[in-house]
Structures are given as C-alpha cells and as structure tokens.
Amino acid sequence: MTVSSTLHILAADEVLSQLRALRATQPVNYRAFYSSQLGGIVTDPALMVIPFDDHMVHRGHGIFDTAGLVDGKIYDLEAHLDRFLLSAERSKLRLPCSRAEMRDIIIKTTAASGRREGSIRYWLSSGPGSLDLTPAKGAEPGFFVMIFDGLVYPDRWYTKGLKVMTTTYPIKAPLYAITKATNYLPNVLMQMEAKEAGFDNGVFVDAEGNVGESSNMNVAFVTPGRVFVHPRFKNILAGCTSLRLLELARTLVDQGGLAGVEVRDISMAEARRSREMALLGSSVKVAPVVQWDADTIGDGKPGPVSKALLRLLDEDMRSGDRLIPVPY
Image 1 (cartoon, one colour):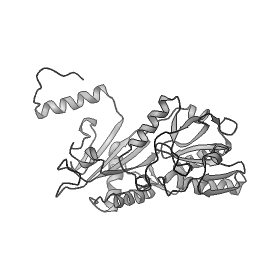
Image 2: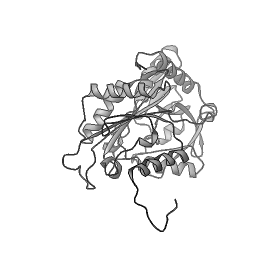
Image 3: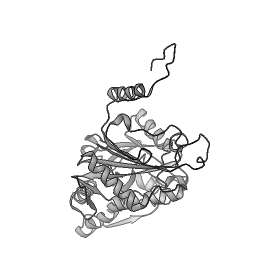
Image 4: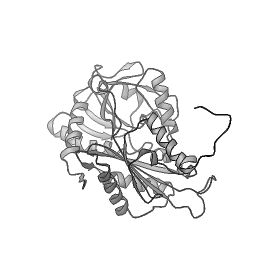
C-alpha cells in the first residue's frame, strides 16, 4: 500500500474504479453475490461488498454455512439450512425472511452464476448502523449468498496423505464450537501455526485430552478393530459431511469393510493407535491423515476405508437423494 502526502477524498465513480482495480490485482473466482442490503444479485466481484459497520465485520456477530454445487445440483442444502437456523438462534440473530425464501434466494443466485461446479456460501449478519457492541437500533439483518469455484486442496493430500499437529491453541468453548459463527480466529491461528511448523493442518484437543476437530474440518478414525469412530458433537461443530458419512459408513459395515460405526469420546492415545485417520468436510470431503505430530498413522499410507468413504460420498453427491437441480 502506498500512502500519498495528500489523501484524496474520492468521488463515487473513483471508488468503483478503485474497487475494480483491487480485483484486477487480486483475481477471485466469485461468480454471483446476493445481498439483501442491495436487494438483488451482482456478478461483478468489485460490487460484492457489505458496509464496514455491519456487526458481522467489526464484531463478528454473524453466521455462515456452505453447500456444495455438483454437476448443476446443490448437495445437502436442507441439512445445511437446518444448521444455519440453529446457529442463528444461538447467536440471537433475526432472520430477514422465511427459510423457504432463503432457500429460494440461494437457488436463484446459483442459477444467476451459471456455475455447475463449485461452492455456495451464505451469511446472516445482525446488520449495520453503529460501532457499538450490540446491534444498532432498527438494524435490519443482512443475508448474503456467494457462488464461487470452491476451495481446492493439493492432490497429494489424497494420494499420499497429509500431516497434522496438535495445536497449542485452546479449543473453543462448546457454545462457540457448535455455532457456525464468522469468528474463526482460533481456527485461523491453528492452521497458520501448522503451516509454519511444516504440517498441513492442526487438531484441537479438549481439556480431558480427547480429540476435537481440525481448522474447518472434522476428524475421524478407524480403530485396529476396524470400527469407524467419530468424536461426539458436544464440543465440536456437527459437520453435515460427517453426519452423512456416518450414515454412508454403514454400507461398509454391511459389505464387511468395517466392523462398526461409533460416535464417542476418543482420547489422543487411542487416536494415535488408529489404523486410519481422516479429515472430513464439505470441501475437503475425505482426506487421509498419515502423520500426527511425530507419530505415523497406520502404515503411513492412505487407508482403504478413507478411499471407500470418499468414493461413497462422491457417488452420493452426484446421484443421491439429497440433490436440488438448479434452474439455469
């Protein structure tokens, strides 16, 4: 950033020009953006903005969620909306409209983007109007929807597996962990710490020494007895992908690939002895972990259960019963 000796007061057309110049130097793959504050959809990334005094910006009083877009269909939107509404209630956020209207806005914004593959992220804020702690009097909640190309992870995560570390940052208090709020500072710091130390990601551990979650992903394991185990959702976010994978894993039990499926507390000691470990999430899907701190997980290679779960999830995302066609 260059600061001139004289600061210029910008006119409206100059502001727009500068916003477009910013996007020219920082290319993004944002395809369409709905804003209840603007009252419609924009496709120019320079116009995908919200007021600086929106409480989601300067106080973190907002929530979000993300659904996948696969082959022109939205995957598992109803489950994500269920969680979105629970997060709104826990955050004392007013809804700008009904669930059905929000669902319709999400679908129509997706159609306006023209994208058939990618991600759909949507937010709810308490609105603009002051820099105080509590929402401004008469502030209208903001609802925003973004269609973008999605997060991309290295191929080696799936072919060779990734490495994680036990983070030095404390796990979130339960209320904040189970609410998908926009305040992700602990998550950001954990991932930054991991990358600085030469790892791909980190893992939270609770005060009792039980496994929590990763930065923006859940964690699951396969025990030496071939049981697929996932931490209880009392202190971590109930990942929609994790919940679906717990259902899909039953298929592997029926096929003999797993001996069972369990959701319970998992100590670090037990986790380190597991045959397999994986990160689960809507963008990462199922990514095998082959090293935790200095310990090798299993034989140090992506395991068969992780590969099978990834295949089942991919099939479910393309031909399952949780798909909503987009009317392009």
